[in-house]
Length: 171
Picture 1 (cartoon, rainbow, N blue to C red):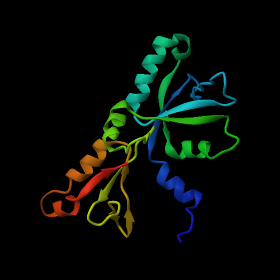
Picture 2 (picture 1 turned 120 degrees about the horizontal axis):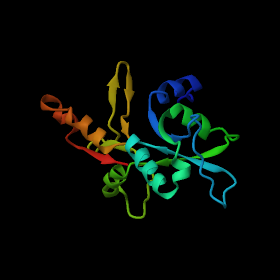
Picture 3 (picture 1 turned 30 degrees about the vertical axis):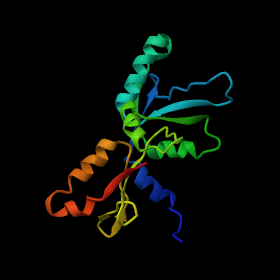
C-alpha cells in the first residue's frame, strides 16, 4: 500500500487548480442558507462562465443580494481545507458548467447522476486508466472539461496515435 499524502503534497497539487465563487464587496463568500438547513452553502463553480451565468440570474431574482457581488477565483486547496474542516461555517456546493454537464450525459450509466463530471481516459485494450509520464512520475490526467480531455487526445498525432487509439472517455 502507498502512504497517504501529506498536507504539503495535497496543497502542491490542489493550489494551482482554480474554481470560482461569488463574493461580496469585502471578498467574503456569499452563503445561501435554505430555511431547513442548519448550515448555509457556498456555490463553487468549475468555470468563470458558470459563475457569471449564476450571478446574472441572481441579479434578476434578487437584485439586492447581487448588488455588490462579483465572481472571484479560489484555489481548490482553499476549498479542500474548508470542505474537510468539521468547524467550517458553511458547506461547499460544487456547480458545473451546463455545457460540461451535457457533455457528460452520454457517458452516464443507466440511473447514474453526476453533479460535477470528472473526465478520464480508459484504455479498452489494457483495461486501465490513461497514464502519462511526467519526469519520473506516472500521472492520470483528469479533467473537469471534456474539451480539455479531447485536446489532450488530439495532441497524440502521427507516430503517437497508437497510444490513444483504443482510449475511451469515462466518468
